[in-house]
Amino acid sequence: MDIVYIRDLRVKTTVGIFDWEQSIQQTVRLDLELGYDIRKGAHSDRIEDVLNYKEVAKRVVDLVEGNQRRLVEAMAEDIARMIMEEFAVPWLRLTLGKPGAVRGASEVGVTIERGARN
Image 1 (cartoon, one colour):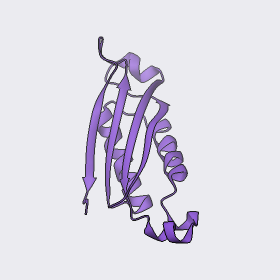
Image 2: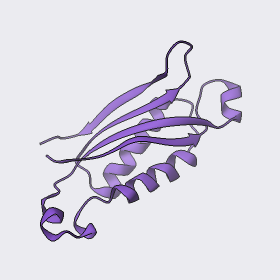
Image 3: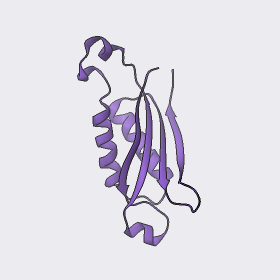
Image 4: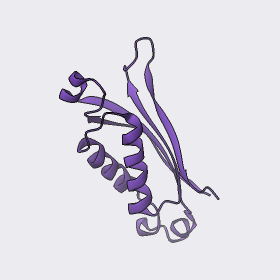
């Protein structure tokens, strides 16, 4: 399986379990690996025949900016579900990090894999 990736996508959103976190915007950081067969686009050299990572990134940003969550786990599931449904991606690995959330750590978060990787 080929992998299309987006690294270090940063989005401002509302996420956190504390009341004060629900009243501010914080930055989350995403790394995405998306399983996709790129051969058709490699042969045609046409954007219509590949997974358009710009469109994926735009949808992720729209979803995260407009989706207030308490847990990064819930946000990660929302993103994975949307990508797999809207872009027909059979497998993905998503890392969602929250920079500065824990003293002494540059970032905390989750990495999830969904779907079948062939």
